[in-house]
Image (cartoon, rainbow, N blue to C red):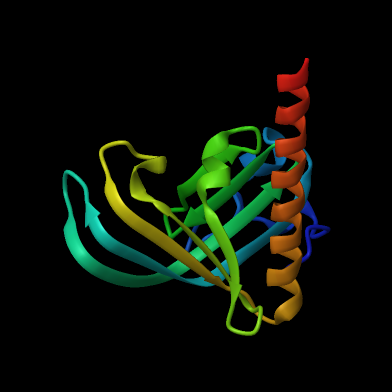
Length: 161
């Protein structure tokens, strides 16, 4: 489902075969604006280096879940529901992620420098969430853009004060 009005009990709170939004996203990260689960996802690593991996190019498929709240952007990947992105809108790191709609607006791409969230990593990470239909990806992108703009406005007001 691409609708954030989905009742809380519809989320399992833990990941099983596909990534789901854990209950914590509903209780500790502000009001839910958008969520979607079990999204077919491609993760691409370019010129990636970490203490355990070296790869000039690696592409893998998994499932993901996304939660856009009034306070944070959260992206969970895989059957173990690992947090891939977890940052408040006020953090400048989110403004360094390149968000883009692709494939006739059905895919949401997020790309960033790998060291943005894990300083020991280098290279580029890209995650492509392949939503069903046009509306979910567009709605998610629109809300992300609104939250990023609001965070920039709040930051500008704080700098003026």
